[in-house]
Length: 329
Image 1: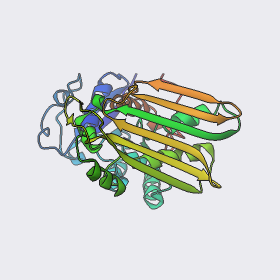
Image 2: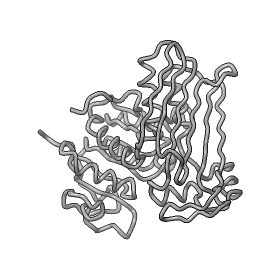
Image 3: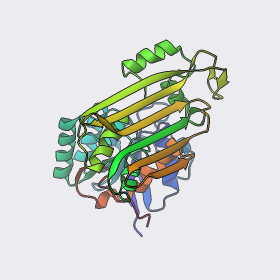
């Protein structure tokens, strides 16, 4: 069985997780590794990822790799689509398929139609596929409820909640959610959209598209949560009155009625632990609950699993609504 050649592009916490997941997938073969961090350039990929990977040296740019057209680039660098654009276009120009963790690439057609069209056209002309994916957005708050909706008849509303215990997650994400900081300062940053989850609107738009719904209004609310008692993540100590996490809600309205309601809580030592729930109200009332879905581990698994199929997908900018989901063979 011929393995699919892949390049790891970005070796931060998520990229290293992708590398570890890649080491467990014999149908994929790492042939290159790229990062801009001078602390890891020149080091062995196996050492950086702490995994049984080929004897590759991490380099600073794609120019230093010798992958042939048709390889798959596993991009884990940035969240914002504008920042990802030059990396994507460079990979496309080299004839590489791309599977990316960029949150805004998961469903860019509503917020970034021109960028989406540019990437789509470039990929079509090059005969390659570009796919954005992650656990959220990309799976648990959009792809999964769309898949569940296939078993429902008429649907009145869909509620999706994701509750995340931040003590289980990387320090970078804890800081991104304001843990241990002044609550008023965190709230101001939330109001300015300088922090908080990137992709809640993306999930809302993707879910609506998967249901065939045209939303009239999208409403987003974000609130910094205040610690009522001291707590700790093991990395950050949080005193009473400091920020212990963030709660966000996104609603999609049709003719004044909320039809999609997404709730995201990112909190240290959240009561009940990490869990996800999808509720469909309609002819049937369906409820699906997942316990313990780890965002970083799940994202790495999704990237690696979908990398096996991307070469066979139609050329262009694709989404998880058009990606194969059922088979792991």
